[in-house]
Length: 304
Image 1 (cartoon, one colour):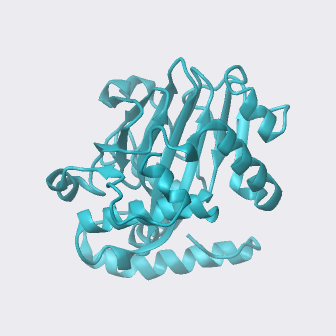
Image 2 (cartoon, rainbow, N blue to C red):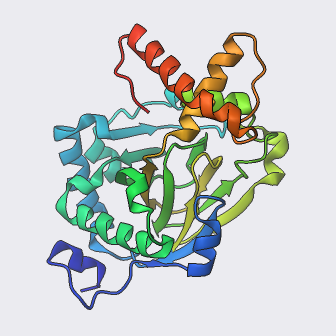
């Protein structure tokens, strides 16, 4: 039995680390730029297909909003809402994963005890590497599991979460762009993303050569900071990938981009965030207030 399989039982004092990170690289790059790391999840029983079918079936029955799956051909720049739906239920889709051309997402896997223990163990290692204070900055933390058919593409996008993407089975290539490159990710796209459109980031094939292309194999992972643009191409085998991710409690990024979104609607060409501390100081409450008003007038619960 491997160290990771001990997560099904009581934690062991002798258990090895799950994440293999260079502390100097981590402290220099964490939440600033992407970097690769090793991990010990490959081969764990938690990520074998029979176990994942069980988890997916339970998710579909008890938390259907935490389950997403589709099947069909996808383009790099395609919007998620236009993805073709699978004609089979989730457990059958996983059984057919080799030929289904499917992409399956199991969110909040940590609600199952063994995956919850995994999340806490990984977060403890991240906290230790980041140094004091980070735990107080984090709100929501989560385990997301991706199961992908051979050769399937995951469309270009950006995330609200800070991610540690860990490859468990199969190979895939991840194309990561610099989130500070405003040719790749313009201010307008960031404003729309944080305010009105989760698919606001637009893939620009003419800038593909600016991507850092990393081949993820079992035991290798990559850290992606918030809003790092990326897309993925699966290899010739089934891919199983685990995302250990979390959102920061500090809403400064969201507040500033929302403020600029509404200012632009008023015909003002706003200064980007973090250029003028004085302007940012009044934009934060303005962005929060304008966003909450928009949510309430549309009958939605305000939130990030």
